[in-house]
Each structure stands twice: as C-alpha cells, then as structure tokens.
Image (cartoon, rainbow, N blue to C red; front, side, top):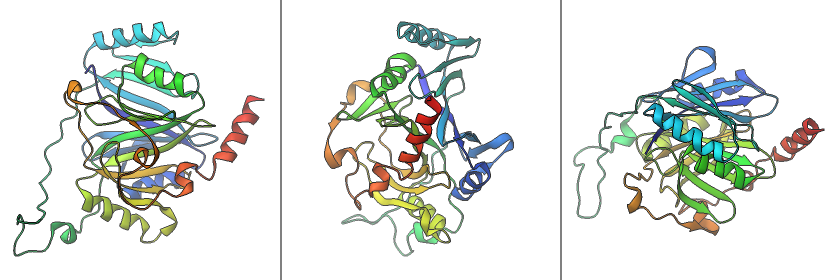
Length: 308
C-alpha cells in the first residue's frame, strides 16, 4: 500500500511534566523538545501542552511524491484543504482538529526478535530450564508505536477523512461505533470511535510477547497501583494480547503483542463486530471507565465552553 507506517503521534495534555515522567516509566526514551523514542521506531511520541488532553497530530510514512499527490486528490474530493511541501502533505480532520501529516519516510524494518520457547502438549521447546519470561530482569521497552484511538463527535466524517482521504484501509468495524483502520500491515493503526466529545482514548505500544506485556504492566503498577485499567486479556479485533494503564492526564496506554498482520488485502475479510467481540476475546470484562473515561463529562463541558 502507498501508506506504510504510523510514524509518530503528538498528544496534548495540561500536565506535561507528570505525563512525560509516566511515559519514561512506561519504557520510552526521552529526547529533546518533548519527544520520546521506542526501540525500533525512533521518535514516535511527542507530548505538548494543551488545555485538555487530545490527539494533536498523526504522522504517516509514504514512499513517493506520487503517494502525496494521490492523497491530495482524494482529500480535494472531500473538500478538505491541503498544505503541500515536496516531501509532505498536511490536512486537518474537521470534527476533531487532528492534524495529519503524510511524509516521505523510510519503511520500518525490525530485526526479528528471538522466538520465545513455549512448551505445550506433545511439544517440548524448552527443557531443563525455567521459562525465559520469568528469567528476564531488564526493563520492558516498547518496540514501536502500534496505534492510536480517537474519539470523534462526527464518526462518518472522521472515518472518511482517514479512509477515503488519507488512504487508510479498513480491517474491521464495531457496528455503528468504530472503525479499525490501517496504514501498514498491522491490523490497525487508527481506531475511530463515535463519542460525545473529541479526545484521545489510548495509544498502543508493541512489545515482544505476552510475558513482556505482563512484565511491563507489573513494573508500572508496583508503586502505582492506581495506574491499572484493564488486563491481562486478548482482543478479537487484531487478536493481540493487551494490558491497559492510565497516564496522569487520563489517556490510556497499552502494551500489546501478537497483533494480526495483513500483508495481502484480498486474503483478509473485515468483520462487523457486535457485543463483546468488539472489545475482547478473553480476560476480565472491561471496567466502565474504559468504555466511558471518567473525565468525559469535564471534557464535554470544556468543549462547550470553548464553543461559546
């Protein structure tokens, strides 16, 4: 596909210092000017000040100037203004105000991680030693940014912006409520959610395996049990293991592993998911605060105040 990866996102929060400290604990490496780097993806998160928490910017890699021209033509058909440079295209989603930047960027090539040996019925991959997952002592550091989840007050327009305009592809749908969209071979890089207010629901970060999901979350909770939101579990859409935590601004962050990979579009059939399938395959049920974050009422009040 013309789009090949989610390069980075910028989140706006009212408490930059506290939130930055959280993502350093989460395993991202602090860099200059509010940036944080993952192990394989480089600078993928920027934290800036905003009156309320929100997704400010999404950057997406493309291969060639022709990819920018094609996206500009699609956005023009949607009556979305475009700013062009030789190496980038910038457009704004009207309902959410999110700035989307398509930029010519190299494709991300990840060195294969060591395959974890797991024993199973009739299959002994590990004998005479304890499981690698319980012997690891190094801190968990995310490999790359996987996806961001965006709440919008105009589900149709925001979905069209990413899908029909920018060129994301649809992987699955939550009936009447959500669209899992991809700009890479990952199952989804943006999830658009219908919401009474615009906000950033969560960002998701790849780790090596389910042991790293558990170890990462356990380390985050050791001195801060209040960070726990939901996990351990496995999603149906994307199939990935997950554990969600909450940053000081109210955004959720997810460690994930074993995400579905869509290399050949014709071999994948999107589903329209209803009920629990839209949320998870197994694990504890999601808490109400995951489905409707506790600060949504305050965000709605702030949005109405700004509108007046």
